[in-house]
Length: 70
Figure 1: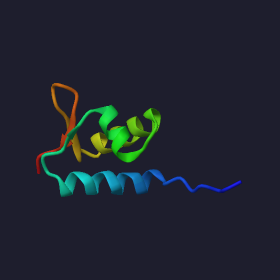
Figure 2 (figure 1 turned 90 degrees about the vertical axis):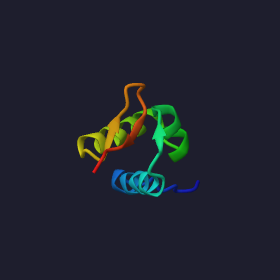
Figure 3 (figure 1 turned 90 degrees about the horizontal axis):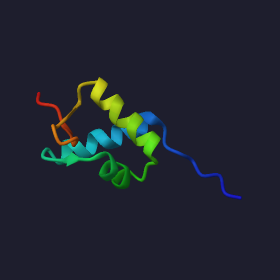
Figure 4 (figure 1 turned 30 degrees about the vertical axis):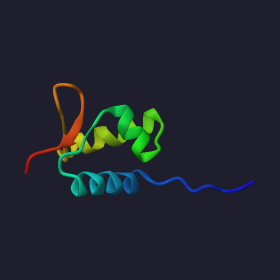
């Protein structure tokens, strides 16, 4: 049996921040974010909530996540 290491929430935060910094116009739905980062729904929601709470992301009226204005 293989021992598969799962990324920590800190690693996921860094990855997501990097994606948004590399692509300033990126706007993702919950489902798109989950597919992009290969995350289950609960983990993805936790990640997005963390980035919202840190004011790195905001949510558009249609429910997409985008980088907050500096």
